[in-house]
Image (cartoon, rainbow, N blue to C red):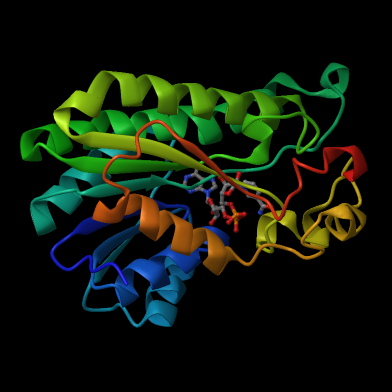
Length: 257
Ligand SMILES: NC(=O)c1ccc[n+]([C@@H]2O[C@H](COP(=O)([O-])OP(=O)(O)OC[C@H]3O[C@@H](n4cnc5c(N)ncnc54)[C@H](O)[C@@H]3O)[C@@H](O)[C@H]2O)c1
C-alpha cells in the first residue's frame, strides 16, 4: 500500500460519493487531506467517517468562485505549507435534456462547476507545486470525456473540456515535475447517479448497468484506489493519461442506453 505520510492532498467535492471515499482512502494511507465542498456538515461527516479529525481540514467553498479558490489554497498553505496532490473531483450532472431545450443558466452552471472549477483549482495550486518541483493533479472526468450519452450537451462538453485541460496542463508542467492525469468513471454508485437525482430525460441507469460487462455499479472506493495509485510514486512515469474505470461500459457501448 502506498504511504502518503507527509503529503498534502486537496480533494474537491469531498462531502459525498467519490470525494468521500477518496478522503477515507488518503487518510488511511497517512496523508493530510483538505476536504473541500459546498456543505460543511457533509465535509465533516466525510472526515469523521475517515477517522481523520487530526489529519483533515474541512472547508466549505465553491470551486467556480475564484476568490473562494484563492482563499482555500492560501488556507491550506498557511496550515501545512505545501500541496502535493490536487484531485479535481467536484462536479454536477445536467438534466440530459436535448440541446435545444437546455437553458443558458443550466449550461453555464455545469461548465463553471465541471470545467472552470478544475481550471481555477489547478491555476492556484500549481505555483506551490512548481516551488516544490513536484506534484500530481488528478481530474475526475468521465466516460463522457470520451463519448456521448453519459449526460446531456453541457455535461458531455464539460467533461471533454476537462480532458483537454488535463492534456494541456500535462504539456505545460510535465517537465517541471508535475504529473497530470484523469480518471474516467462509468456508472458509479454515488448520490449523483442515484434514481432520486433523475430528470425527465434521464436514461434508465439500472438497465444501462445491467448491460455493462461487469453487470454492476462501480463502488466509489474503487475510484479512490485508482486515484491513490495515480497520486503515488508507483505512477511516476504516468503523465497525460486517461484511466477508464467503467466495468467495460465503453467497450460494450452498443448495449448501453
Ligand atoms: N457517479 C457517476 O456515475 C459518475 C460517473 C462519471 C463521472 N462522475 C464524476 O465524478 C465526480 C464525483 O461525483 P460523484 O459521482 O461522487 O457525485 P456526488 O454528487 O456525490 O459528488 C459531487 C460533489 O461535488 C460537490 N460540488 C458540486 N458543485 C460544487 C462546487 N461548485 N463547488 C464545490 N463542490 C461542489 C457536491 O456537493 C458533491 O459533494 C464528478 O465530477 C462527476 O461528474 C460521476
